[in-house]
Image (cartoon, rainbow, N blue to C red; front, side):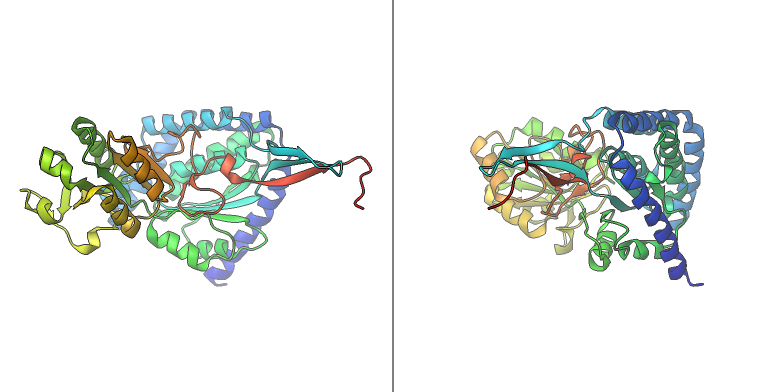
Length: 421
């Protein structure tokens, strides 16, 4: 039996079980879903040693594959990160249940009363790389929104994801919910990804969370709808009216806090007016912090910088590397971002309200910030408890995808023997 046949049989089995679980979840009471997530959070804490042991195995495997330090950081777990995972589960548990929420309601002259209410999507497939915390985030948000989920983590995070998945299943069991509500592909077989992408009638939507290669594969081969999560080519623009102290603080954080996350800044744009007024302070800070600055024009003359190539702009480094360029005002920044960005997250540093408004109006990225680090591009920081990804498409969900974004809606129409003339 070929790998592809086996993979299709596996996904058919997982999908069939997920559809049955989704029917039950759509009617599950809020307190049962909350109890499941609270129990899962406690299981993460209780099983910390076992999860860390599993993660150590994954890190060894990843090092043998030659993953970069930034990618290893995305994969690595420690007690603090597990505490954060548990905290995220509890935060999702405590949020309002979106299922059944009335989005709008109105009466018609015909005598009909119409309500538009939130309803689960059904079965969600999540395909992700490296980050085992996505196992908890995706499982929690799917459960909260009444959806069943099939998780396919990266090959390098197999053991960590399985250990966290076991905690999610323990939570479901404790709350009396179907254990097949959160399932995980139990192997590294790439054929399973292809099988998920073609699972029409079993999976209602695919959410890819990873690099450009993964997302491109999903978008080109998927036969089910996709919530696109493109790479995070995030820009920070220092305007001529930027406060230099704020700018220095924000830029360093945006680039260096964690270089392997999709909200890390990958390109710094500096208004010529700022550069001529304040000199090379922004570049110097980055160089002093150990960042490789690939610069263009006057910035390339700064000692320690590296001349940029055209390919450096519009590139997701996920490392201690940043591209840098001078631009002519906010319109120059907007033009650059429109050409090279991925519509993920951009930040403007300015004290000028008019310039900030122009930046916000002129760009169509999913997240636009002012005087704040792009590293805040995260569902947890947006108050969602967790996120399943940052959707960069323009249909349905956009930006951080939380529980509410994992719902569709239906119309509930009430009459009183009402007929249409």
